[in-house]
Image (cartoon, rainbow, N blue to C red; front, top):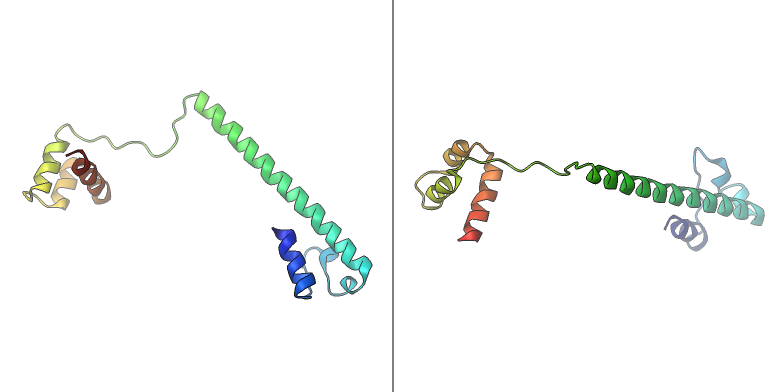
Length: 126
């Protein structure tokens, strides 16, 4: 992807690129001759290869770490909300317009967002 964009900018658009912290990739001065273009293309290819390799290694190490954690019983994601036993009664009161959402959420002990998710799940069950 980077190589394609580089080629598009330097060859198709014939624009110069100056990489501030990598003088070898400066296409303004040395890039005007064939050797300069060749050197900048090779340096870019090498850097691109190294970056792609590092991304693959990071992804592999991450997958290994996740696998080991799961084998040890580590749970991923946000913990489930523990609701009181009378939650369904409170949700039914809200659905039947006996109490409002703020009251119902405070009785159950959850945020309004979680409350509305519980209401949606309750309506899907019925």
